[in-house]
Image 1: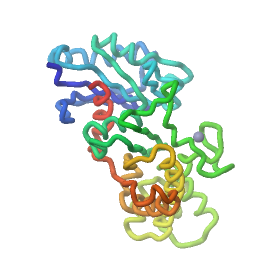
Image 2: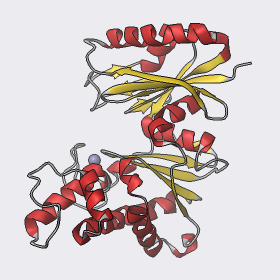
Image 3: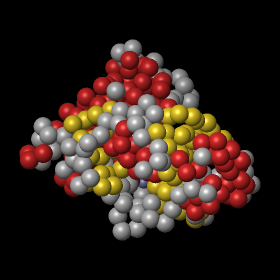
Length: 313
Ligand SMILES: [Zn+2]
């Protein structure tokens, strides 16, 4: 019986992997650098060198397959498409095929936020739910939509880009070339941009002054935890933009819950309590007091591996 799945999370710097059982327990894990390989073929060779002996030991017949989470991953084609944060830019990489052939097991790929959503559904906060939205608040903002018990992939496999929904018309310029995208406000990057704009405009006392362009979301979190009112106001503003945009999203899929994941979500109540308040204020009447706001149920360090592995089942 196939009782194990391999999960691989391809990040911009590191590629993490783990062997996971059906209960979502990681039995073995490790990582290798994503960078430093001259070609994609070299990277695949490194994955093979790292993982083939492991699969040999476990017995390939015991492993149902490998699930891969990657930025700009397309579930239908198994390709990574023009991922901006990976070393091989401007190319389409048939990653699922390459990894599957190298390791000799079935391979399935999706984007990292969809993998996180599937992980929450399989082992985390959304267990048993058929309708929810997963929002990852990291450097950027990723999302996965589950509706009627299924991941929403869209006709081309690229659905669910909440980070690039317009939160403010003609607002901040986004890396995607458009203006006012949600992730320019509600992400670790976004809250730092807000802080720097406010520091330039305002004169109120805050411990966040004087970092000369080196301010981080973590510094803002630490200041807010110490009661810095400027930092708390940053969370309130970020939560307002997030809550307003999510209220619009609720009108599309009517989710039972919105599950938050990632670095900025670790601020917990400082962000999620005001986000819930603004969401409720902006929701259409028929949705009010129905949508749960939840923090990820997956352990932070292992969530990406768990999410990827859940794809394989
Ligand atoms: Zn954008």
